[in-house]
Length: 79
Image (tube, rainbow, N blue to C red; front, side):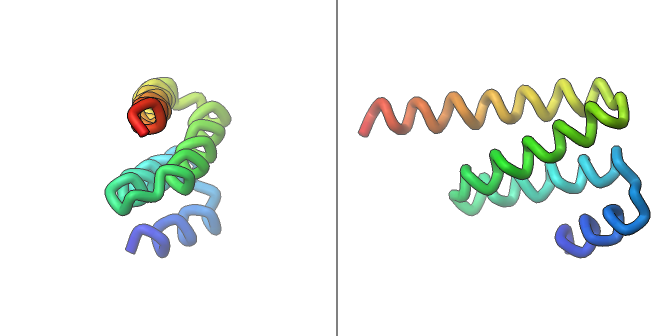
């Protein structure tokens, strides 16, 4: 369902909503143990939020990305 939402929002060029759907997709990637895909998806969402001037979404998504980076770093340190 999220993939379909992303496709529709891309087609109608609904930038903020597309970014929000990408954040949902990234959270699913995180839950599925796919941090690389989550990171790439969050990067795309951040670019969309910057383009749309959606500062609240940009802030929240940037924090999520920073948290993901920190968790990846910690997991590598303990290996």
